[in-house]
Image 1: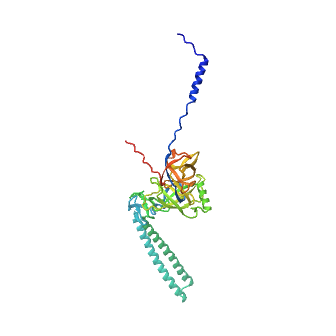
Image 2: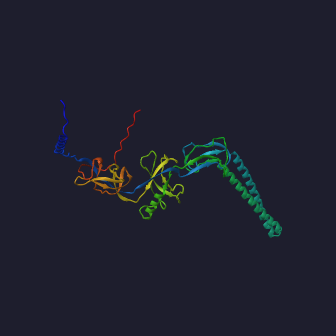
Image 3: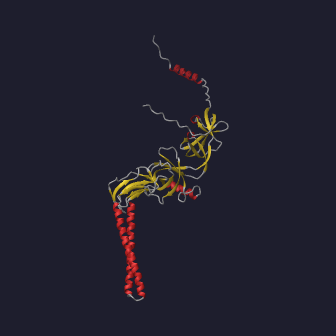
Length: 393
């Protein structure tokens, strides 16, 4: 049977009925979401000063190149390399026989000069008595007196030679000029070494380890900030007195070493745009050595009252830090805050929080401003760090 197409009017009526029936349906009822479960804690209120961190290198307070003062063959060594020595300890002995002979010769010359001086003194005294009786002429008496003065000068020269010979003999025994840790011996026994004021042979080095310096560079902006704080009376300046400093090594957590800043250079480097500064720290165990990398921090502000919260409680909205605060009605309010650096595992909040504010520290992603939440209260503690899993080999 041949089927004829439906008239266009019937098609339009069918479409209208379809839309009408769908429009009469009621929309589904809106589902109500349960309040989010969050953990809140009150900030830790503390009066503190912020710290500025820098990097530096450790350096010895005193470092000495031990050099020979006299020339000769190195005879013996009397220290253990890499160990501590005390000032005055014997380190090396240079063959002293040449200098013993020189001392003996100078002593003989001194005795000869003493005899000549004593003879000239006696003759001058006798000539003085004879002059009173006019037994000798004035000219002869003056010759005797001048001869005595000449022998006295010779005696002083001979004494100086003896003193120098004794000093050279003493310098054959090379002793530690300072207390500290000694390095390796650069020259071994049997070698000829050169002494003297210039070009003397370096035998070893000694560095003083307790206390120890930490040198670091402070950028120009920070230096200007510190001077402004000093000008306004908010913080003392290291330019005029020692200030507190803390230091930590590369393998240490935090800054366990306490010290002071005892030196600030007198100009900003035109090359680096920074100023050289120095901290001094005790090193009783002598575990810190010159050349180690170190982290150092100094007070970067005056003392003020701050709130401390978990860093994970802080959110960011277009560069502005905020937290969620739960009111007495259980509703969440977004609060803009001004944050500072970390302090003992907690984030410093300079402005925006009070001691009684309940800050969301867990469940932050489920909170919306104005929403009611279920609250569980706890105390503000640093977030526990989870150890990274060790891959199996």
